[in-house]
Image 1 (cartoon, rainbow, N blue to C red):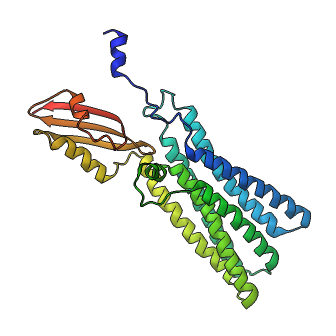
Image 2 (image 1 turned 180 degrees about the horizontal axis):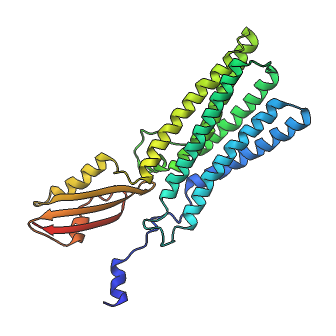
Image 3 (image 1 turned 45 degrees about the vertical axis):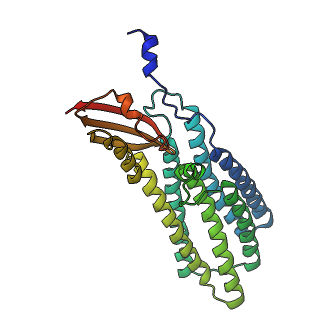
Length: 304
């Protein structure tokens, strides 16, 4: 067979991963804001001898590092999208970035909990005015970052929201800035109560509450991203639609079925069909719904 004819049945495995995603731009902006604030806090902490400013600056540095990992995942996936050594493209780099971010999020949560428990056992005096000022500045910066990343809720299902929902890398970045914003809110509340009512223990207790919430976000993201990385079968409602589109025609039966996510809102499908009246694979491909994000479909047909 001539190569020219063979090309008719060949296609690339880029699946749009060579295009810059919206999340990449947003993550870059948030990194710029976070890094700028981090440098200002560390410098002023040294200049004015403020441990509160210095500590918050170092805390921001840890989250800036996590966000840089998220940005690297976007850039790596885009630059290697045409690399044929990736069997189904670089879409799973997105999930890997999200998984890495979730692990770091869990580490930060454990650090928050450990520090809070240590404060309960060994209380220290707090410079309330300075600490409240730092927390308010942190809340403003992180609140702006949350708005920039603009992560969509889990219950939206139109095309744009669906893409955000499956962008695990963006979700990881969003949780990092949301965790910082939550920490600032809890810190401000605890510091005000401690300052005006003398309940010093509120500060570390709020730290533990924040750590528990952040840990829950981390575990949820780990569950979702690990399922993608391990090729777990995709959503059952989509599986049902695929099977029904085949089995509702003639006497077709799906004997073997593999359906997995190969990128954000991009799926691969391998179907084995048993039928009395066999037709070419292209016939069955046309039966599949066109709105499911099926980017790589392989069908084999067996005569019953």
